[in-house]
Image (cartoon, rainbow, N blue to C red; front, side, top):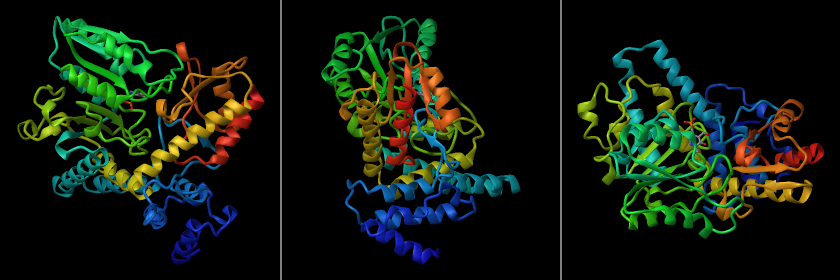
Length: 438
Ligand SMILES: Cc1ncc(COP(=O)(O)O)c(C=O)c1O
């Protein structure tokens, strides 16, 4: 199909004229040729241009989005909490810049990369509702969390309040630091399978004392899928003179996030998860007023300039993979082509359909993740009576090409995280398979 006729065809899809069978959806159709990613991106923009912001386009549209990803045919990947593929336009940018540097690694040829890093930081700032001086592009959520853990000035008599569902990089990391600096780490538990926001907020309020300096929590838990009412918690913290840190590993790129509206002091995330960005790139947001009080973990070449360049002070990491850092900007472009609100709604719709169909179609299912979309987002964790979750995780992949995760401990179960490259047909198929295994 020529590009012109494909464009015409896509416009018809929005009008609902064309049957889904006619859409060229095969993932294998993406050949990895240079430029194909840009064409796929243009196809998406052609559809979304002029659509109302919140309108969730139909399945034809999401099949078009799926084509941007070079997933191996037949694979149903629902592991976004762990690692996501990047769309062709982002891959191409990484490949292109990597090749360019490998051809000519001189200072002169690489001079352009500084400008691309600035562009990426600015695009990311706009994407997150931040000022560009508040954004550092670091390696991943782990590194961003470590910057706050190591950078806060804390000592004996100070307390840090943590959710007991935090990831180790925002939990054990605090214990290790407290051992050295003598402050106290307090952990807050929330009830299993919560039904109201109030039961999630109350334990934090009860934990705050006049000695509390910081509260830090996952926006959405990677182990239970519970979403904390982040803005409410940050407001409550601010009212008490307590700083707040949000680990956004499970929300950055999956949920509409405006860090200024959330009111947090720190927000962290990984580009290679829901954001579908380059591997080993991550986000650290530091509120302008908090930058001076946070010590840098890494000090390297260029420190004298970086120290007065806002959050870039936390990006002084030595030689970087500039191709990956630059491609963060291309990933924002991809999200903008789809529409941030539309992607947010799609993740909610997929997770909602998955939960509803599991509830109705699988006997003995128990959800760790609330069914209420206000108390959850894209992470779905459940167990099925009589089904060994670890074995099921293995069989799902080996026998059915379904990529998920197995959880242990208090939230023993299967974790499935559908994302914008999944279709409603895939959700139905996954539920049928689990029902057949139960
Ligand atoms: C809540 C949370 N924080 C931090 C991380 C660490 O992410 P990364 O390995 O990309 O640094 C993860 C990884 O799954 C996570 O779920």
